[in-house]
Length: 295
Image (cartoon, rainbow, N blue to C red; front, top):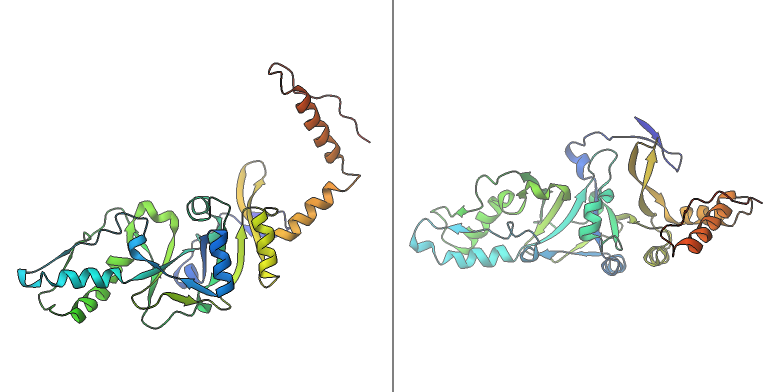
């Protein structure tokens, strides 16, 4: 169905499934406010060691040798594997639900909703040659099991490095379906620590238009990109759907309404609050105020 949001924008909800490159043309990264400041000022995105992943199953990457002669290769396998770093992003969930609209992601990675969600255009991120990038595949059961048997031809460190790259889909880009809500797009590298994101950030999202973090983000970006906030819009008293609105415009509209002497809702709200404050110490007192006075 088509819905008119509070910004008078016509949108179609629910959205349609995205396919191919449309899934990851736009990417999102949830992070704390402090981390965003570093990212914005440096124009660099730091890759995180795979050893710090929060998925304990993903950290389990055992290997199996063909014979005892290959046992020394286990040390090369561990060293090369642990040298990899990753950048994790969230993709759009469908043609309506943006990657910045996940309550779960805000709670897990967005500073418990006090942080920010950064929007990127993938084609603007300068991904160095040799990096591997693709969406994560989610499975009910990991098949084949995450036990990687070395080919009998593998003898050297270079051979092990090639084996890991050959198996990269299963090693780095496959997770259990319980993580599917992350809708992750990942970039990995065994050489680079940073991605150059100059001109790649296209918007920043928060969960409030009046928080201290919001005001500081606006000052920091100085209108270089839109600063938006994610909230919910009730449709026909049936649906609460997520939407994004401009923070400064929303704040201005609310302030204008509050300062409007002809806005009867301001008077009613204040009288209701005063009535509650006067009655709240008596749990049996009626809180139904029938004596509102309008100017």
